[in-house]
Image (cartoon, rainbow, N blue to C red; front, top):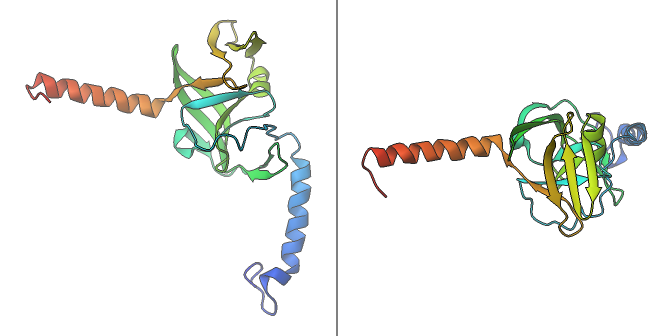
Length: 190
């Protein structure tokens, strides 16, 4: 058996597998607070790394892109139930740095969900962390702990997309610009 390693039966007949599946379903019930309720999961075919959607039904910040993490604990694996009832597993949790118009920001406690097709900012998680999120007249405003505006996002196709660059991408752009500047200073044009 490829499932339990014991001889005498095949994986499809394995009793251990059935017990495991029963255990997993109990674990799914126990993790009720990790939900992603979004009806638009299937709408976006291509993943855009720098676009984050503000989501009121998502309980945690989530991304499918492991490269974005500056710190990640890959031992954290929990099930996430999406809007169509399907369950996706997280592959870790950590921090991501993004560059905003007002400078570098760290998004903490972000779940890595490889099968997700977008980056999601959880309104409940932001509010639990002391941020204020205001929706009015087709826009969403996020205020920090002191009441200062971090960003204002206009609604596009019934979503609130924020375009941020990762700090890694910004560092690469800056490094390339400095290299090009020195290249030009040394008299090498083109």
